[in-house]
Image 1 (tube, one colour):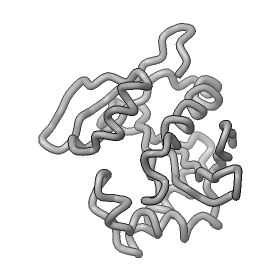
Image 2: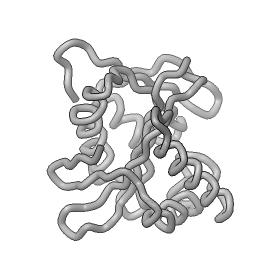
Image 3: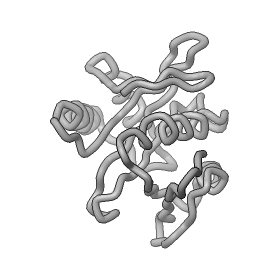
Image 4: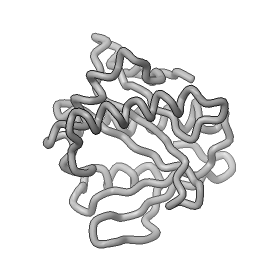
Length: 168
């Protein structure tokens, strides 16, 4: 289930992506608008859970590494996971390395994910949680057609629902 966009290759994570994954999830600057950074052990445990989920006949989550076509460098991760908090709907998550933020990467890759993968596997609704102070991400999801349907003290909850013929 790999795909590409104009500027990026997006491939299912493998063992070779562990150090990159851990570097993102343990970095306080990268994680500042997402959640509290994990320690090394916690990040490795979460990575192993992701790999295990991907190996199941009907995975409840998918995780892809994002690589720049121009130099094959890893710039981030994009994933979806089925979550009870969204009544078993699919939550979208993107983590970009700190030097890859605010360059349009997330928008391009989300568009590719929806248009090339999710329609093929029958997912027509995506949810997201975004910290209220993450104005870049909020602006991006609004531009992609997500709408805010509730808030708590820390997060806004967003949803995108595909309508017939709609594409990002």
